[in-house]
Amino acid sequence: MLEFYEFNNLNIFIVLVSTFIIYNLLCNKNKTKKNELNIKNLIVSSVISLGISAIVSYILAVKDETLLTENYWDSNLMSL
Image (cartoon, rainbow, N blue to C red; front, side):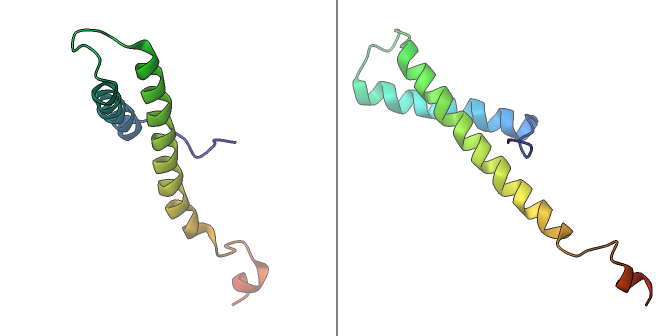
């Protein structure tokens, strides 16, 4: 199902940065204390960032699959 997804350096960077940004946005929205860790906001931001990373990976994988639209092993092309 997620054969296009590879957890490589780009996706790790996307997950970490988007988790940090979304967590800060959620904490500022709820106006929690600065030194207090909110586990609910951290889990929500992690799930959203994994979704963003999966979407980016899918977009990058679709661009690579467009190279495979021609039938390379077609017998009609080999006879030419």
